[in-house]
Image (cartoon, rainbow, N blue to C red; front, side, top):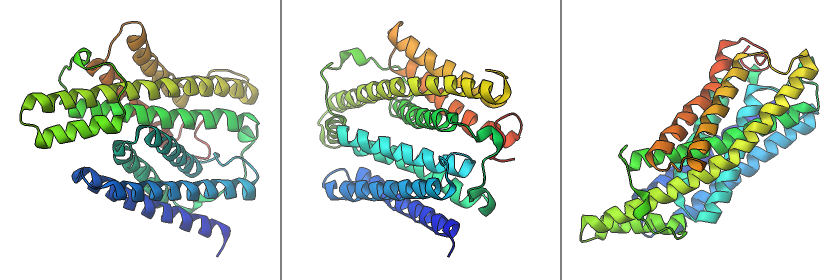
Length: 312
């Protein structure tokens, strides 16, 4: 068995583990009480998948001799690893199974696309083209992948906010401003919904959950935006080194700028305008689709300076 086959087999194992973890998290959400052991099993499964992904990426780095972000397959694995790492950290802080139930399906889809859609030739590590033989490869691409992971996570929470609120305007000011762990907020909401004698109590639990989702989406997007900014700047410096121009209005560059504008608008509306709730959730949800167009959509065109090593 050659090295590429071994890595692909390990990647398929990661897919199976994530599928199992997703099932566990969804079952634990369906039966909210008495599922702590299930959540622990799901978390251990996700951690195991994350370790396997790290070993796959590290082995490709050692064997190929360069940072494993030179083609679409490697970037998809790196994005999945980053998503799982951030999710495990946040879940450890919030003690919330909601994070895993929402984010593991995304990681599963990314891994499935990498393993089942891309051809074996596209999954193999290949020699770097001259434009990629630069010290800026690690800086630019890793920052972009890190920003994609954090912004996807924050955007998903925005979409979840819109789903739970049923796209209605919600007054979050009436909820107590004290910091409440997301797990406790979820427990209040589900218990109130199942056992509360009145709709008023259930509605208060829902408002607490929505406020917590709004707060965490803001924090995560606020973390991802600087990564995106650094990644774009590093890309400009790299472009000048490789092609003699900081900006060429390449499709990938254009959509990266659009992504930056969308999330800059999100943060601006929150910081200076004081927006929250539905308005900012719409902006964040829009950002989710813009990120995927920027990351994958333009690569299907096979045009521009970023077409090498992807789907060309």
